[in-house]
Image (cartoon, helix red, strand yellow):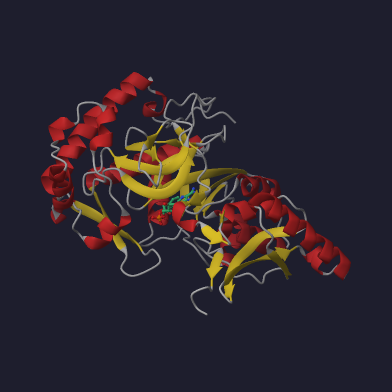
Length: 440
Ligand code: DLL
């Protein structure tokens, strides 16, 4: 399926601009946004003054590295409205993201910001091959979370028939999926897997439904998971990335080449830094993604440290888009589990589990501490057939999984096979790691 060959093609010309032209747009926007932040947001002004910087010091795109970073704590410290650069009368939408502890962070949009958000979401769905002929079930949560309403705006502007079902109520989701002739779906990848299981339980094969495209994001998932989803559901699955602080979904998206996520660089400027030294790294090197908003009016963010670990891919994408790509985000710097001195990421365990047949991609990683020693246990669901099989089959599988994990992370972990449907499901972002170490 080639997005350019369809008669209806809402992909923005911005996706295909020659680099010099794009960089010109970026510089103009960067200069304006730095001035806006400096003039209207006390925190940015103070940080720039501390460095003897004024907006006129931004003469080239490279000068962005002179600007101070911002972090999540800045949003918490100025809660709720301290980073707004627009008066409240110009703000037309507020969202919030709860995070793990304490107060949420609050983000805001002006009318212009909403137009930008809609446009990047249209570009996202167009890159996945969706058009005004599609019927799309939007199972991202509606509400303070940016996923539901963010995707909704883009789908409606694209001209697709959007079903604003939100997350949850799985049985109704399956009924709608089947009865409404749904051709596209959006949700978290973990929730889609839950839908797949439930459909199967109800005797419905997703492969036989008209569903052809899944647009998934809001949490890390591996390429192995994508392949499993594509195979089991008979669809094409696309990874979309974004975060509330920057806009919500619509920061970066996969195209048909599935070789990284194109960042909408005319609105969001990406850099990769070494998270320890904060040194800016060249394209092709892995580090923490830092994003600056180039057009956001209500709440500009300068050099926001996302904590998401990725690489800016070198070279051109076969799809012809000139906007650069980031590699699929497999981990956050703060997701790292240190176990007996070894750094482990949940995505490594997911990759190992999916490489072995007979398990379902539902798993939990449980951390405990016994007499000062950290233990890691991986609970993973097995398929119905295997579960009802003889003990020997299960033991063999357990050993295989344990050695697949050891092979990838370098330490032995305890693997526990559990019955199908015993790991709690999430309607939104999955919680894979259960850390009991400080509870004992
Ligand atoms: O999750 C926005 C979103 C909604 C993105 C729907 C995609 C689809 P937050 O709740 O603020 O915003 O969480 C942002 O989620 O920093 C990443 O750590 C993670 N994340 C988002 N998308 C992906 C992805 C939304 N495709 C945080 N892969 C980000 C990996 C992702 N992690």
